[in-house]
Length: 158
Length: 154
Image 1 (cartoon, one colour):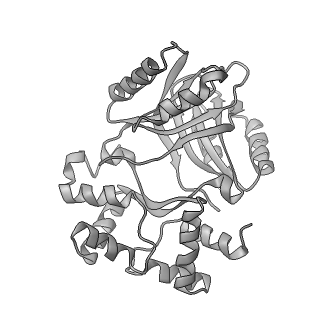
Image 2 (cartoon, rainbow over the protein chains, first blue to last red; image 1 turned 120 degrees about the horizontal axis):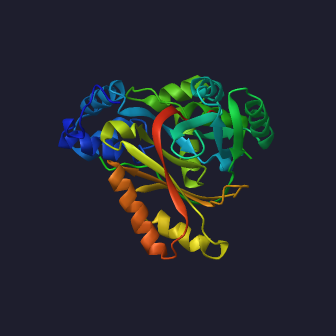
């Protein structure tokens, strides 16, 4: 739960404009913040100050490039596990220990955890699946590889 | 084929870049290349579609999007492209994939829906369902705890 920022309304109109703009590509130029600031009619120092604040409050998790794993010869997949009742925390710890696991969510339904993996090849994914399958806290593991991508666009109107 | 240098660039820029006036200069220095050469590669990654975006990743909970439902659907193969396009057309849907079915898991289309409330998510599910107009079996798997969210390591 968010402690530091109780309500969305705590962000003013300018903050929202900054956050909406930053969810689009930053300029691939020498001074990306300076250019972005100018677009918004503010100064470079000011936008950098706000970005630092947003990061401190964990509103911005990071500013980074996002690649399409497949296109740079990596493999991604989705997996789900059913857990031995009472042992979920141990299972979470085990699953999260792989740097290949990028997202991991507890969800309603028959599977307790749903997580995504990005790995350098299929062999590595298969190896992780095997290791998790033999984990004593995990009752069942299933992999749901993608066949077709229809959309990926993670952008939130602030 | 990606060169060794490309891989090194991808590895570095997939992590949070430094919050300094000239972040690419710092990154280029780490790589031992010219800033101009780095920017040229980044522009190439974007233009070629290898890179989806270079942007801020927000914590959706902190900006009010507290609920997300991964909705799984059982859609006949013959109309799956149409169904996928319909789902993708909703702003509230961030991801939509066709995935393999499994034994005892008769779902082949997945859509991730974000909303400020549970009701908001469910109303999008309803709208999608109405638009598909086939009464296809589906269920919304709401997340109740985020255990991990990070970028890929390349």
